[in-house]
Length: 293
Image (cartoon, rainbow, N blue to C red):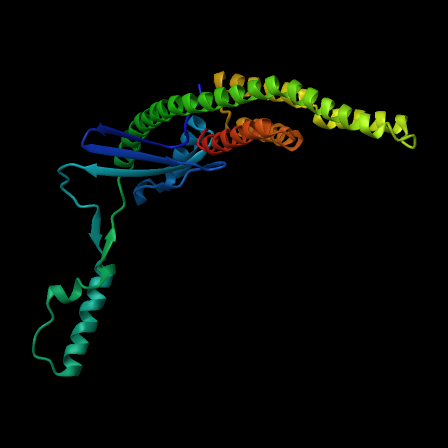
């Protein structure tokens, strides 16, 4: 069963007072790309998250967003940069005296400077708990994403099989019409030859050679046989359990090649009409498989 490359997955997990939420959004991409957004304290785990995603999926751009909340913390995850605070205090006092300002330096003046507060070093045990929560939430998000991609894959597969059936229907009409078209062309050629053979200067060997060349140009049997084979390969790939997006793309190229050849050899309004219908379905196949993993 095929899977779509588009989808969404969300997971949440709690370890003690830590709650982690992971969201994954996936869109089409030729290869696999895994950008990750996560808290600074967990930046060391970015490659681990990417490895988990690459293990679960083969293609697509999967954007991962990680959020972590800690409940009822007694200490904020920031601390005062005392050296910076004192330095700014002294500078502001010097500025006040130099400018002859009577108003004293207040706390709000110092806190305007961003580097007065710095991120506190997180406790290793707390960091490990954060990762445990994220790891569990990530597993849940991956499972949700896989389920959604499989669900969309069912809809994709149904549409692709409908396109294959439409091509086969048009191909059956081409195969039914082709012998009649050849017979009609042969009859027209015979009528024309009967007129020409009244002229003694006509080279009969040359005429027979031209008849053989014309018959070969009109014959689409080999193209029809190959097209049936490609359609069968396409169905086999759909029934497989592996990632088949690239394989389907290659098969569609071969299907397009045979349909183009049939169209070029048509020389008949009805066959040309069926060839156009097949081309339309092939283009729809090509568009849809861009969504297949």
